[in-house]
Length: 165
Image 1: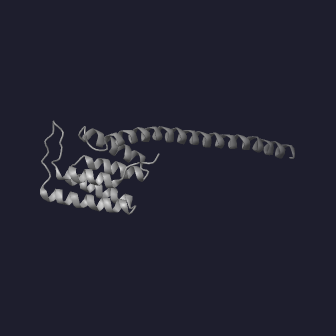
Image 2 (image 1 turned 60 degrees about the vertical axis):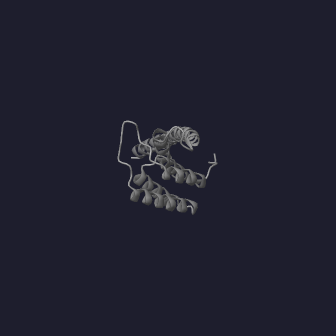
Image 3 (image 1 turned 90 degrees about the horizontal axis):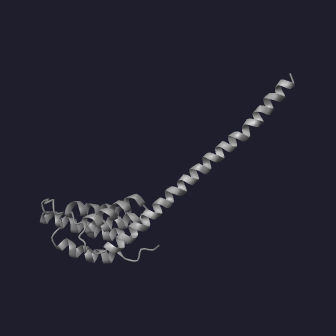
């Protein structure tokens, strides 16, 4: 399945979100990021977007993570999930999409896309695990069959050696 949205649209939403105050959990009241940290977060996000657009996904994910660490803006979790998804890092993508859905406000942009993609990734993970188990079982069965095929040959060779003495 192709992901039908772009980092450009995420960038617009994130720029708006970074400009506004950071949402925090109701039972936690961590200190809001300083103006300096927010400026650094915006710069890290811009760098991440530029790297993403160039196809340097691993470095883009690192830049988005830096932006998140500085701003604690949960919208960035979507960017990290999206980028790790593009990298094919299934477990990390699942982790970041789940964290985004848990931490981001109910009306956050890309909530629907994250939910749909998360569902598909979880199904893919189950299928991949089942395929890996089947492959391992087939390999083990083949090794057993090969070993069983060698035993009669060894027994015949021993019997032949005894009779020729």
